[in-house]
Length: 89
Image (cartoon, rainbow, N blue to C red):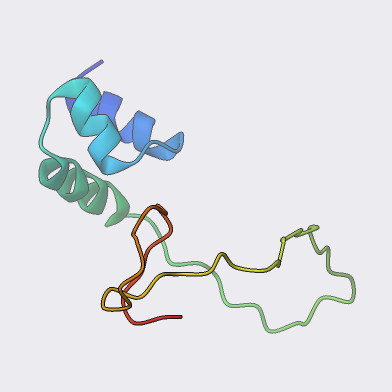
C-alpha cells in the first residue's frame, strides 16, 4: 500500500491531519491536498425533494453549571488560581 493511500485511510477512519503528520512524517498540507484530490471525482450529495416522516434524534447531554470566579488582572488580588481571565469579575 502506498503512503498516500495509507494517509487517506487514516483520515477516513477519523484521524486528524496533524495526527497523521505525526505518525507518517508527511506534512499535513500535503495530506490535505491528497484528500482534496481524492474527493474531486466523488459526486455531490443528492438533493432530497421529499421530507422524511420519521427522524431519529441522538441524545445529547450537556452540563451547565456555575462557572468559577475569574480574577481581574488589575484587582490587586493574588493570582493563585489557574482559572484566570482578563477583565472579568
